[in-house]
Image (cartoon, rainbow, N blue to C red):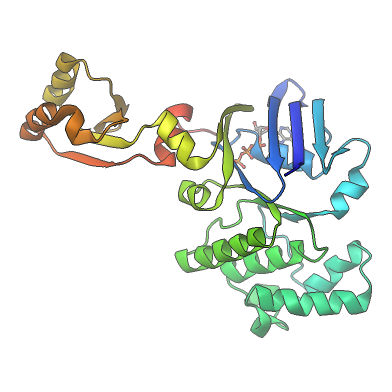
Length: 304
Ligand SMILES: Nc1ncnc2c1ncn2[C@@H]1O[C@H](COP(=O)(O)OP(=O)(O)OP(=O)(O)O)[C@@H](O)[C@H]1O
C-alpha cells in the first residue's frame, strides 16, 4: 500500500519556539494512525500542516504524493477535518450545516442534499435533521461534525480529539463509525488523550513530546517494547523500597506505588520477592498498557 502522508524532518517554528522539531513519519493508505502526546507536544500543529492551513517552517511534507506548499487546494479537497472545537453554525439546523459546508467544496445542490441525508443516517442523526445545533447533546454535535467532514467524500479523515468530553456510550458509537470508515478503505489520522481509544483504534501511532517523535509503531509492539508484559505494583513504603533495592530490582516511582515492568509473567520473575513485599504492603499484578509507556516516556509532571 502507498503512503498517504510522508513527512521528513518536518519543522514548525513560532518565533523562537520550535513546536514541531524535525519529525519524520509515514501514514499508509487504509490505516488508522494516531498522534499521542502531552499538552503542547506539537500534535495539533502537525495536523494543521497536513491540512495545509499552517505553513511548515522546514523539511518535507507530502500528502497524496503532493507537496503541501505547492498543492494546498488539491490536498484540501481530498481531506475531511474534524477539529478539536465544536465549530458548527449555531444558526442552522443539523441538515443545513451539512449543506452549507458542501457549498465550500462546490458540490452541486442535489448531490449535497442526497449526501447530507445519507450522512445523517450514517451517524444516527436522522431524527435530529431539523434541529438547531444548541439542542443537540455533546455526542450528537461530535457526530454531526464527523458527518460534515465526510461531505466531500475525503480519502483522508483527520480527527483532532474526536471523542473529547463524551460519555462512554457516545464514545463507543464514534469508535464504531471510525472502524466502519476504516473497513471501507479510508485512511484516518487522529489525535487523542485517551490512551484506551488509541489502543483500540490505531493500527500504528506515534508518541510526541516537546515537538519530537519519541516512538512509532503498532500499539501492542510499543507496549511490549517499552513496558514489557506485566506490571507489578507494590505499595510504596520505606520497607518495600528497601527490599526492592536489596534484590537489585529496577522500579519506577509512580506516586504512592513502586512499579516493576517485566517481560515475563510476574509471578515467575520474583515470587519470593513478591511474597516478601506482600508481608509489608499491597502488591498487584496487571498487564502493561499504552498508558504505562506514555507515562514512562513523557514523565509524570504536569504540562501547561
Ligand atoms: N499559533 C501559535 N503561535 C504561537 N505558538 C503556538 C501556536 N500554536 C501552537 N503554539 C505552541 O506550539 C506548541 C505545540 O502546540 P500544539 O497545539 O501543536 O500542541 P498539542 O500537542 O496539540 O497540545 P494539546 O494536547 O494541548 O492540543 C505549544 O507550545 C503551543 O503553545
